[in-house]
Amino acid sequence: MVDKNRKEKQFREEIIPALKEKFGFSNDLQVPRLQKIVITRGINAEESKTSSVIDELVNDIAVISGQKPIIRKAKKSIATFKLREGMPNGIMVTLRRERMYAFFDRFVSLASPRVRDFQGFKIKSDGNGNFTVGIKDQRIFLETENRPSKGLQITIVTSGSDEEGRALLEQFGFPFSKN
View 1 (cartoon, rainbow, N blue to C red):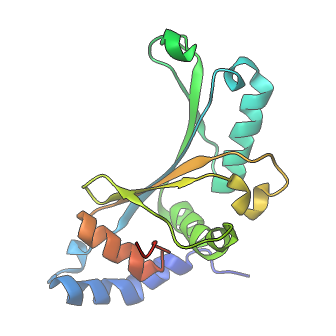
View 2: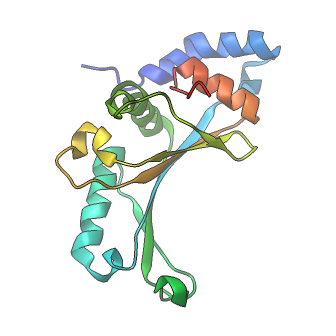
């Protein structure tokens, strides 16, 4: 059986001392940390018309994350996208603490190697230490391999700058692209 908090233990025992030395921090609390992981998936106009499709998408994200997601609704109508106020337009789940570390461990250790022709993730950063990964096929997660192919986005929120956050993720073994 895999230890549920393996990455959290690794963070406390190995990563904190390594990052303290690398960045010259004098206190453990200065070291950047994983704060939360947000998993999102958009719902198009066709999918939002039937509740059974939305329920299926919610179940997929719930199985992947281990937590039931919320359904986001449109705040205002946009005719170009055939979107009306109050229609569902996205699914979102925020993971923290034990579930966050458990998901991160499964994502890095099990799901990432299942990506076809995998060369590492080309990750986008927002300048505040938050990194977003776009997944084209959710079937990389073992729980959903018999489901239809759908995409999702995973945002990893860290407490440090971009440089510190990237160093943190590299210490965790996150597979960055070489380019």
